[in-house]
Image (cartoon, rainbow, N blue to C red; front, top):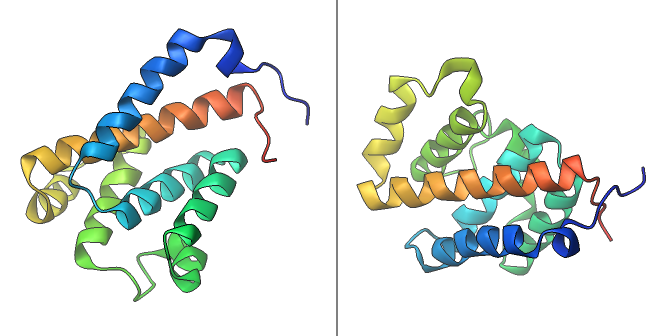
Length: 145
């Protein structure tokens, strides 16, 4: 597969806007391991090889467990995730796949029970950001190095 466009060079102002989202996420109270799990799960759903490669490496560098990384796509069946992580992963799936079920009330109840209003807002921003990065990388065929 051949890259279509270097979007960093073609749209530096657009990338600055995306980076601003990342700066807010970095300042949030969300735990770094949780942030990487959310990025990975959305990237799995979207099939973004570039983002999967990058964020799995970032997760490993941050000390993430190989078993959790290997079972992330089956998090519902795997015993390695906390209730808070499960709520975040369920929220990630619902927001990423918003056209399918429009984020059901049951998913809201779950995430609302484990996160503060500010954290839910930041978690949603994180999901919006990674979905945006996935779309840039997929549309322009950015490949892992």
